[in-house]
Length: 104
Length: 513
Image (cartoon, rainbow over the protein chains, first blue to last red):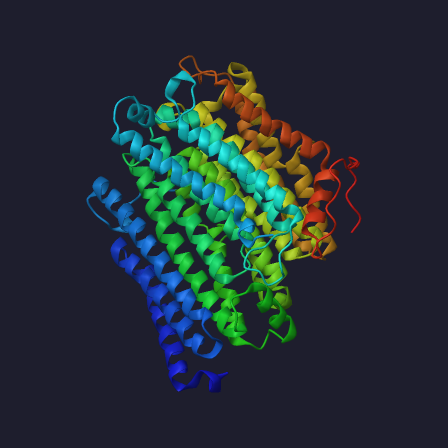
């Protein structure tokens, strides 16, 4: 498995795991909706990196997957930013801790 | 058979959604009466359906018929899209739920002044996503279906832009949903790395051939996939978003989320875990066991203290995901068919009960506390009786479909030797009696105050849809044998011969294991 990936492949996998972890920690700790959203994009790109690294070993399917993930991430960004703008019009902030209408 | 025919239901729905959007754009561009018709939503008060509502209903019915017609077709085992009983069963639930939601939400749209073309187009696109999700036999397609469903529903949740609660629910749902999607993608990437293919059928063969426990990539991949799906079906401890999103969303959308989104994500999870990753059962079984236990206990306890009926139903819907997970842990053929039966019953009940909630709530959703249901059973006998049936089915009383579903799930759990799950299922159902029956008590045994808001008599279309729900629940409760036999045949691993339509109605006794 390690031999099939090669050193570069292994490095790519480790980098992608680190990127993913940074993304998860960012989503859990940061409170600004835009930054949280950026962290989610980071997680998606970490997955893309793994897919490309695995594609070296397994063939083209992983690279095709990456294109789909990128297209979907673009759609998600369009909708997500629109939602953030919609809520900014009500509250004039994008701080997740300030949205407290819905509780318990 | 041409290969594209396998996607006929999805094609019908997609074309209908695009037609609605284009029709709306051109009708508005030409101005005048057509624009006013669209803006009033759902044909306003004159009882006439708008074009988009009609197109939506017909296309969903068409997709349903097309998927039934596909039942006799078969696909090669490594096809990207499944053509089997599992898909037909799931499509039946999804299309049926969407039909109920669309026909029940007409009044809500016109009452709240929402634009109906976008609403219906998004419902259709979300439905396409769900149907792709349950039919996908390839990780890429699974992901695209999941995202098409999720993104459409994010928008629907924030549909009432002028209401901050709706926007807030939408943002929370979006953040958590996108977070979950990232987990799903990363899990899929690792699964692809471990098995070397994105085709689920091929991956299943390779997993079954090699011992799974030692493969770190595979274990991590399944774990991340499971976390992502646990967010989507709102299993405890990944449920925090669900009550908020359900509460803040416009009620028809809540009902769509609680029925369609949950059913689709759940069916996909059921299929991927028990069929494709069945060879690696020791990896996920323990985790799903804990998810099931926690998801049965926690939301039922929180629901006890809820004063808002919509929020109470939101917690109840989270709890029902726990009951459904029992069927996943059982992982047997009986467990799968019990889950599908329960899901069907739950979809009908949820669509009906949320519809009654928004009808009683009145303009601006003002009256949806438990207090507002005092004396409802006498002021609006038909609505009260229907809500009574729905609540009894949710609680699991005979002779409703909810009772039979719970019975089959119990049986599947006991057969699989999961006694702790069975006991938890029974105990938490008993706890749940309290909050369901409290509403029934308020409806029939407490007098309404003088200034109480009496909901207007519903329109015939609404009554018809509610009546359908009640009839389905009682039929499912009285004659479950036939339905569950169909479910078992549809879900058998080896595709059985298509059963004759005029099958004998079976007695109530549960099928032998």
